[in-house]
Length: 499
Image 1 (cartoon, rainbow, N blue to C red):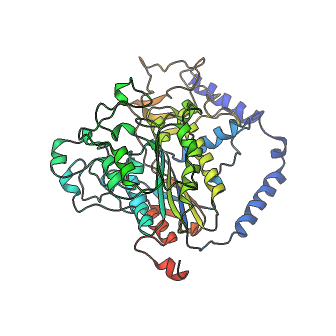
Image 2 (spheres, rainbow, N blue to C red):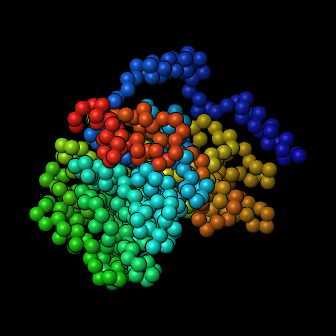
Image 3 (cartoon, helix red, strand yellow):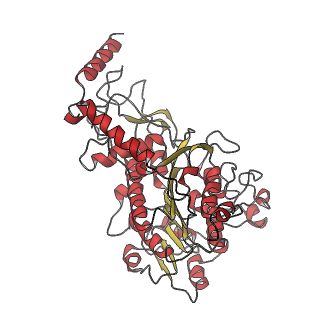
């Protein structure tokens, strides 16, 4: 009881004295009235863009739930020596905002495979399955036959557009894989990952489908080891056995891809030097695989060795936009999710900030009147933003109010994950701990799970107003297709005349 009174008294002091970071102009009511008036007028002046979308630029923050979005906004500002809360992210400027319900057919809380199938293929499905309907059972090869569903990337390609995928994970990971693959298991990266029964029943691995299913113009990410025969030394890490090729079938998919592009200007690169040398004006196809598996976290990236997501996004757009019929490009900030699974809020937020800079680059390189740009998350994570931190306090710091056990706690923490550190009923004392660490979690799990709340969908450009309200996640693919007149629904094309 005494501790509770102390905590309440401290809170009253915080509220009474406020933060020293408050700006003088914010104490004037006219500051807020004027700001709101300007915002209101900009909304009133907004005109609907009903053009047919020549291009679709789709940014996916894997695991970038609302809490991550908010915290990343603050971090972005604080990295620029601002207080952070009032920072305007590039994605904040998108005029149309909605929510997507992320559950899968079989689970309240979904994974990246089921969600990617929903927003890219327009069909909700089961956990761990990619590019197939919910009639497919997880890991059961026979059940996927006849239940394959195609993605908006294929619809765009069939319409004559150029298409590409850019990711910070391996290109065979769930999100990018949903653009081209059909599989009963998201884990079948190469044939070495497949059970003998699945191969006997005629299923193929995700890497091989990257070549066989859709002619993708730009492929950028990681995943070299799933493309080459077992024992093939990695060009960057020749002494690291875990980085060597994994395939049991002896196929070198990189060489096969190069052979398939005979007569075209097609570049395969695995390092930044060669990547920088690729001239987008003369390049027809690009496959860039910078790591054996996933790319490095942005906070760990060596800018001399690995390009940023801003650089890869720019290269992809410059190659794809040469097509007079336009393009579809998926850009995934995939390691936001992986950092959250590890309980590393620091890493996750830096990944989200990097994605926002890539979004800015995308807007810079395209025209709003002809490019539908979407930003969304596939699912969220159980990270909370709590306590009563002062205005301008580090988003990665600690609440000024200590808990009832007379110990401090960080303002960002997890509902579950590897950060559970309670021993004998006592939390660790983090007074002298740098909070670039595994954040405290309430429940011990090896990896933090996903969480099930709705995620934000932000849009600008042609038909952006379609992305408003609370919608099922599979609606997104159909709305994008309608806006661009790709796929089966051509009503928008008819309304706007011939493309």
